[in-house]
Length: 256
Image (cartoon, rainbow, N blue to C red; front, side, top):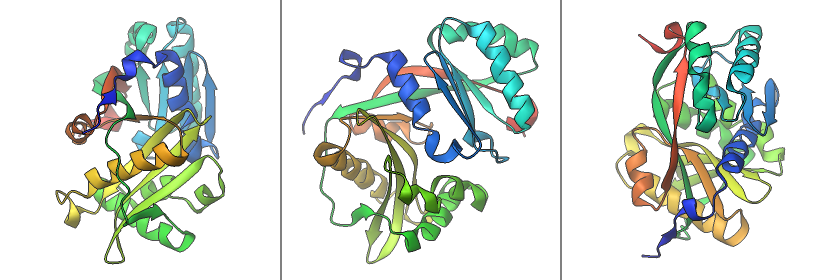
């Protein structure tokens, strides 16, 4: 097996964080998307908390936290605010505003490593996006509108976006969205496998096929924020955890 390069040897962490923020544009550009060197905000405008995000990671945590909180209040949507690096000093203003820490998730990267040309893997066509929307919604157990956030028809018109599907006997079994940021980073979103097909190796095939596409015609580096459920797979496939992002939200948005 080819050995993946450790991203800690090449990644500029502030640049990687910013690139991840730039990669949210595919689903937030129609509502609110703003990126600066030390923070970013991406609001889809929907009621689904995981697609209204902000990251604070620079040396102005209190100032930026106040602005981000104002923007979320104005948008009137449930949201998550993530803290990394020096931005972890924004804890106090978030706590004072009634926000709570709900945990932390790994910010991960891959450069090189295992890649495979899979004959069942290709870019999705317009008439196949409806199936991808349904598959993603079912995989993540969320409303159908969430699948539509990522696998919207307009993604096919964006030069920085690639919508991918893995097919078995003509049936879509897994899908994902890649956003290419200045052809340096590929930011991954919503890698999903249909519930009835999970634990059959399709997620691993997708990760390796995506790596192959990056190798032949895409950015060399991949960026993702993994979930607890997906981290083991990414670890096995050569991803490295760059750091953990602390997650904050309002209790009524994230607690039962």
